[in-house]
Image 1 (tube, rainbow, N blue to C red):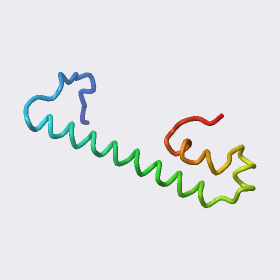
Image 2: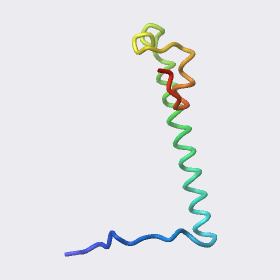
Image 3: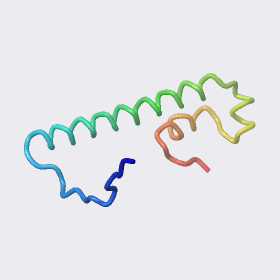
Image 4: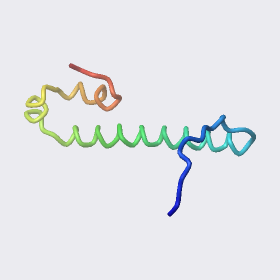
Length: 72
């Protein structure tokens, strides 16, 4: 039977490798946020004006919703 220590704390990353990893994690997070906004924008643009009205939106709200801002 294997035991895993899940109570270890990390004290931050040090050196070039740690900073490079943090940079890559930040870039990956920014890309994921951009991709989520793009997918949301494309999905909402695919709806008709009537469908948007059914969910309480208009075409002008799409960019705000994709950016994560509430329109309600």
